[in-house]
Amino acid sequence: MTYEHERRVAELAVQRATLLTKKVFHEKAKGELAKDDKSPVTKGDFGAQALIIQAIVSNFPNDQIVAEEESTELRQDAALRREIWNLVKDIKLEDEASDKLIGGPLPNEEAMLDIIDRGKSPGGPTGRVWALDPIDGTKGFLRGGQYAVCLALIEDGDVKVGVIGCPNLPVDDSVPLTADIGSQQTDDKGKGVLFSSVKGEGSVSRPLTPGELAPSKPIAMRPVTNISEAVFCEGVEAAHSNQSDNAAVAQRLGITSPSVRLDSQAKYCSIARGAGDIYLRLPVRRDYQEKIWDHAAGDLIVREAGGQVTDIYGKRLDFSKGRTLAENSGVVAAPAELQDQVIDAVQTVLKLK
Image (cartoon, rainbow, N blue to C red; front, side):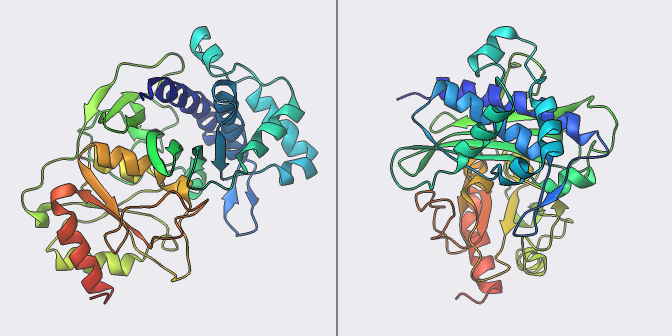
């Protein structure tokens, strides 16, 4: 079975959602709320989720959706709800055929709330499940840094399609990678990349546009003959990965280049196109379970670009256990030929061997 229709719908859905997130990104007031787990959510998260689920439901009405947000807060806050609706109703792709393919506009405010709540699937080992993070890296989004819009199709527990929109990554692969590259500009010139992959077909990137999809080009992990010359990508937030352990792993591998710290699955995308080599997300708590929407798309894009993605024990990430990676601990992504060396260093630092 090919997944070209699923890929195209996902690419266009993510591209349309980035039009909304970029509009919110440049506003001073982003409608920020604190969720029960103290993590932030913005009107950009809610609006992007509504637009993407609209595209999925319009094309694949029987598929399940595991998404990060739900509408309870909005149903209790009429002012914020109206503000988000005013954003959502005006967002469309400039190419009419592309916008029509992904469902066109939502009819009204209530339909927006209902579509947001289509993301409550428990996931699991069977059937087709879309994993959606409407704004991955919300803290980066709020501070004016990197963030990503992420969508993946998981079928019977296996990731088949992955799409990530990174509005603040440079289109030019040769631009040196930094945590805030281009993100402090008031315009979007030279920024915005859409990454995608279908299992068995490699990974590609293309510039984000406001209309139809731009031409794509293949991407690949860069060859690293000496692991000491590798570059780490890691999260900005200390709560998301144990940065002192990351540093110890780098030291053990003889890596002296400073780590690049980025929010979101932009890290997966960066190493997949050779702007960095190794991504570590080492556990900060023994009981923490990673969410599938934080990793599914990036996992496939890296693997199809010639990399490997496992947990700290060398096990493939298991997306069949529901809304979390309940059977995994941490994440290690690296070029396939270096993965064993990185895992060995991680296990030594964490005293797992």
